[in-house]
Image (cartoon, rainbow, N blue to C red; front, side):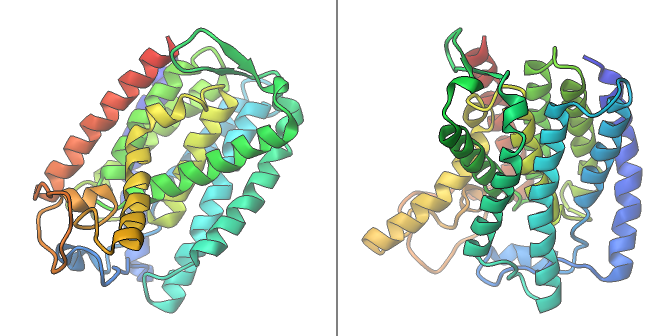
Amino acid sequence: MDWLVFLVALLEMPLVAWGATLFARRLRVGQFIRPEGPEGHAAKAGTPTMVGVVPLLALTLGAGVLAARRPGLTTQLGFALAATWLGGGIGLLDDLLSQRRRSSLGLAPLQKLLLGLGAAAVLFLFYPALTRIELAVPFSRLRLPLASLPPWAAFSLILFGFWGTTHALNLTDGLDGLAPGATAIVLLSLAFLVRGQGELAGLALLSAGAVAGFLWVNAYPAGAFLGDVGSLGLGGLVFGIAFSGGAILLLPILGGLFVLEALSVILQVLSYKLTGKRLLKMSPLHHHLEAGEVPWPYLLPGANWPEPKVVVRLWLLSAAFVVLGLLAAS
């Protein structure tokens, strides 16, 4: 693996992200905090947001340099970049609506789902050129040829993979540094899994470096946020690399933290709808673990950890899931 691209991205991103943060502050592009969120998060209002577009631009430019090593853009690299910008485009629209309305409300959930459906349809256009991919089956030596799946099954895999990864990563982006740190860990594992696949492995390493470098401005206390453009874009990137690299069936294990965050929201809603009681203090999971109390009853005890401790411990959990995923691939 070419670790030089990781190192360059890691060292350059802090400076670029810092400049973008100053630019966002000058444009008064600030974060709006949902009123029902944790009480301690009110102080985050006005923090420059949408700065997550910077890692997306950086990894795209870097991918162009990687692709220049050989004529043309490989289909796998093109698929990963398309997934990145389709996710980022949905997030950008969400962010712009939020800024226009001067509130935390952007796209409605149904609108996001429909846009995700359209994005999956676009990504499915790559399918004929990706049929040579073999999907690694967890905890076995089996390889499932993508060509063996009927088109409807392949489309479903793209649709639910894109939907699930983008929205789960978006939900994870609720504490300073949590989503970028966990994403960098997952991207490094994907770089290892696709290490023999040329530019795709380079993209994974480059992206891991860029996302880790973004922590310079996003670590607690955050000076800038990814915004939905960043979180949904990174979700698209993780999905795109995993799918085109044949690791999509391993992704629920590698990205186990993202799965837990999404499940916590689903279970919270189901618990309240079915029993009238909340399962967690607040969802997603990271808010349940944070210090602070709420006026309503809930079933599971909270941890009452300070925000930085929640973030680091969830990074460790993410690393544990990655190790499990790598074992599942061996």
